Image (cartoon, rainbow, N blue to C red; front, side, top):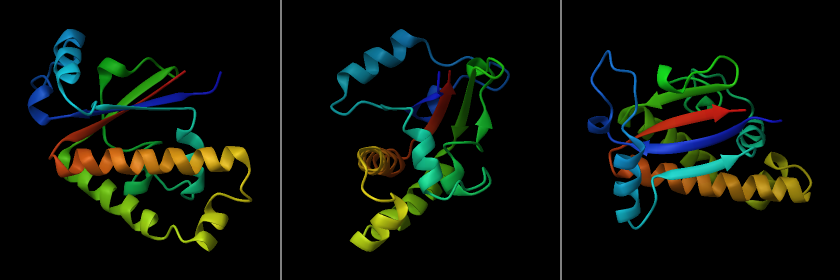
Length: 153
């Protein structure tokens, strides 16, 4: 089974104090999320890896490498090789949004063909997922929130 990815929007005040590696209670988050007009969660599923590869497989130290690494590890989402969670604070999320915006601006037809190969169905799905990811991260960054990237098998 391939790895899946879910990205969550979270405010710094929603993280537990240092030393407590747990996330807010599910009921606390879900009740808040259900009251909002736009959810604070994006499920990329298995599309995270094709997006990462289409972006050139950047290292975790680069803002565009956030899908595969970087950020602060969240032990509450760590389960060996089966699951990892990483938190990107609001300034890091703003850097990610800027980097994604640079890629989105380059979405001229010739660049799209290069980034997403020859227009196969999977490449078109990857492009659509990228646009969804970009719009989500842009909203999160503009609201001053951070991201949790959860990759799991």
